[in-house]
Length: 177
Image (cartoon, rainbow, N blue to C red):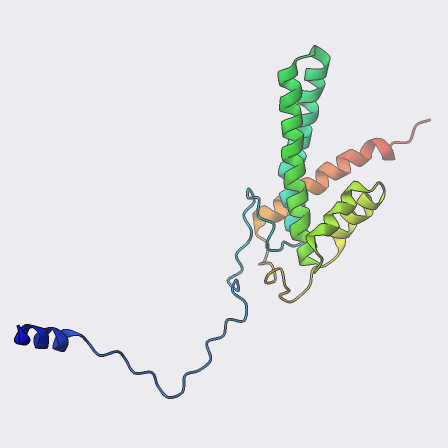
């Protein structure tokens, strides 16, 4: 048996020796690969730019429009299922809108708690304008790295959202005689 133990000891490779000096291996920012937060997630970590804020608002707008339609039908017919479905669509749109707004606030270097300003009348309009127009921080901040460049789909989504907003303004701009 001593030969077996000796052979087994010889088969074990010696541990590699570290050089006397190794370059520092510090991670400057753990998510420096510019991973964007996914659209259909509930996480509020990360940041998005102005155009992504507009483009990612499309699902919220669609959910709000669906909620209004279903609620109008449900209230007109008195069907509980339609009312519950409409409220569900409204809540889904609200969750998407709040999440995207928090990510945009992170791009501005603000806490996500600032999203509570959406529930204050008139201040919510100012907050929405700031989120649409103010440029984000040009460097990485505590919420993540600088958002990556926008794709053609982001430009298209932002354009659709702006078009929908302009359609909403038409009745206001129409002059009556």
